[in-house]
Length: 97
Image 1: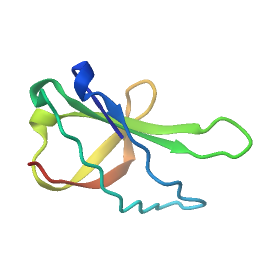
Image 2: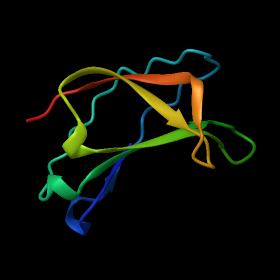
Image 3: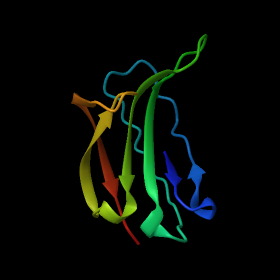
Image 4: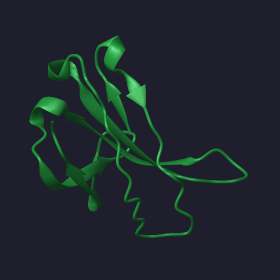
């Protein structure tokens, strides 16, 4: 999970690894203080953790901060070519201050 935007706002944070789960629940919270929220985008990337090889790409999405609304949202994921996974979504809660 990270923020892309003006250099002072750019940051990346990682969740804890969830092992052997088809329906992982992270239940983690990240807070970001932004200088220029109008130019900021939340970047979310999911990876399948591997101990012996490079982690596999699972999906990603980018959400402009300006389009976020408070509450629980179903967030679609996209493959590395930009195609939306029809049956995969993340359930996320957004609180805007």
